[in-house]
Image (tube, rainbow, N blue to C red; front, side, top):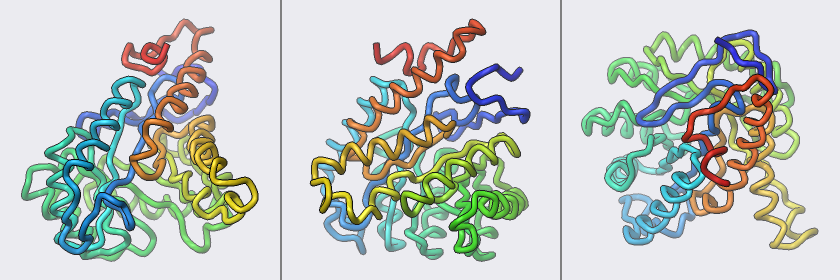
Length: 306
């Protein structure tokens, strides 16, 4: 049964389960899932990006802080595990799986070889239920779809973005139409849609596309809003270094206010700042449901952050 909330969609909103995390549904009722990146390029905890050697103690410290703030706020967390080599993705996924129980995104930095290696490792290690490919794009080749089908990987993130879709929310929807069909044909059943952000202007278009896609498919949607700030070249020169963190947090709040089911907020080191802010917005959105006497689950941020 659909609830009357800030966003009234005519399409039934789907709630998916990836590992131990539920994602999707009615904004204000379902907590926003936050996805942070680890082992990315220039991440200081990475000692050798080719071999996958990392500073384990610092990795443990960062992940402990992430788990702690996730539990305190009631916001579910996923890890975007980034790697630039096939060897590294296997080591990173193994370590992340050992240190946390949260879902893991296989992010080969655009490399098909690395992504395929990540899928293979997940299958070998029995992790397919808690991993998700990040991501299927308009450039993804048949080899990746074949591997998804052969491995029986059910979870995938679609990037509904291309050069043609850069300045158009509707083009993002059209891109998603094609990718959803391909992913489903490969056997993916848990499909999330990233509407693509590269700068401040595209953040607005990505948020509009999110709403269009939730109405059309009811699937979980979101975006990597922090990319808008990373490309804001005038931020620090004009406003100083102290302006960067508020901007990063603010960028992640915009899609949440506009109904996102998930947000990729950037490096996991930002979690202690981003999570409380998003929890505040989720709590405020849940207030819209008071008029209908609808209360979210007791694990919702509304009952955690007071």
